[in-house]
Image 1 (cartoon, chains in turn brown, yellow):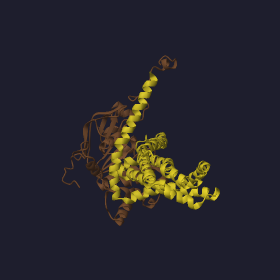
Image 2: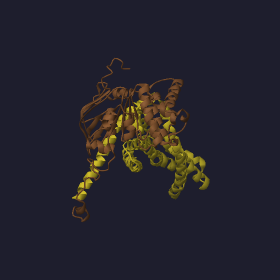
Image 3: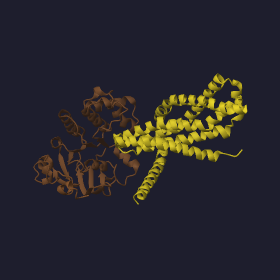
Length: 273
Length: 259
C-alpha cells in the first residue's frame, strides 16, 4: 500500500505528547517512534498509561499537546471520516478480547470485512477461514464467544485484528490472565505473524519474560517517562533503578510499596483527621 | 450551607446530563441515514424491541380494557347511559391509557433491555473495538435501536387500544349484558378521528421518541462497570416513566380545546 515510502521512516511517530486525565497527569513531552516491520514492546507497571498510549496512537484519544503521526499524517487534526479510513490499516487486540458477544467466532472475524468492504460472501468466507486457520481456530468457527477459554478468545481477537490486513497491529496486554501454555501460544503468534505478514506490531504488556522474548525493540515506562529503551538485551542489562525494580519484580524500590499516606503512628492514634 | 452546595451540585449534574443527551441526539438521528443501506439492522431491532414486547402489551391491554368495562359501566349506569360504554372505553384508551400505559410498559420491557445491552457492550469494550475496526458504533449499534423504538412504540400503543376495546366488549357484553351493537355504534358516532385518534397517535409517537432516546443515551453513556450499567438501567426506567407522564400532561393540556 505504501511502497513509495522510505522503509526506514517510522510508521508511528509520537512527538512531544502531553496527555492527562482529569484526575491525574500521564505524559509530559513524550516522544517515541515505532519502526516498520518490528515488534515494539512497551512495558511498565500497571496504571502508567500504556493502554492510553494505544488509544492515542489509534486517534481515539486526543492529546493536549504534541501529536501522533501515522505515516506522517497527524491524527489529531484528521476529520472523523479520514480517521476511520486510516483505522482500516490498524488492528487492535483488546485485553479482554472485546469480541461481539452476540456473534459467533466466524461472524466476529467476518465483522470488519463485512462492514468495511462489499466483498461477495464466498470471498468473505475464505478470508475468515484463512485468518482463523492462522490462529489455529478454524475448527471453532461456530462457537459463541461465551464458550471460548481466555486464550482462545484472545486468538479470535487476534484473527479479527488481522482481518483487514492492517499495517499496524496493536496488542493491549495480550498475556494478562492467561495460563503459561496460552501465553506461549500468543507470544509465538505475535512474533510469527509479524514476520510472515510483514506488519508492524506494538505490544503493551507487563509480562517481562514474554515481552522480552518477542521484542525487537523495548521501551520501559516509569512515571510517564521513558526510563529505558533499546533491544531486549540492552534493557535486560539496564542499571536504572526503576527499570531494575520492574524487571526483577521487587516489591519496594523507586516505586514505593505504600500509597502516599500520613504518618502511620499518627494515623493509628487518630491525630490526623 | 452544605445542603445548598449539594443541591447546586445536583442541579449542575442534571443540567450537564441533559446537555449531553441533547448533543448526543443529532448524531444519532444523522446516523439513522445509514439504515437505508442496511435495512436488515433495523428489522433485527424491530423484532427484539417491538415483537418481543407484543405479548406483555396484549395481556396488559386486555386487563385494562376489562377493568374499563366495569368502571365505565359503574359510572354510566347511574345516568342510564350504559349503552355508551363503548364510547367511554374507546375514548379512555385512544386518548390516554393506550399511549401512556404502553409507553410505561415499553420503557420497562424494551427500554431497560436496550440500556443494559448497550451499556454492557460499552463495559466490555465492544463499542471501542468497533471503533477500532473502523465501524461507527453510533450507526451500527445505536441508530437501529433508536429508530426501532420510535417505530415500534406507536404500533404497540395502537395494539394496546385495540385489545383493550375487545376487553371492554368482553366485560360489557359478556358479563354486564349491555347490547353489543350499541357498544360499537356509540363508538362509531362519538370517536373523532382528529381530536381523539390523531391526538393519541401524536402522543405515542412522542413517547416512543423520548423513551428510545433516553434508553440509548443512558446505555451509551453508562459508566463502564457492573454498578454503572445497573444504575443506567434504573435511570432509564425512572426517567422515561417520569418523562412520559410529564409530557402526557403537557400534551393533554395543549390539545385540550374547550367544548
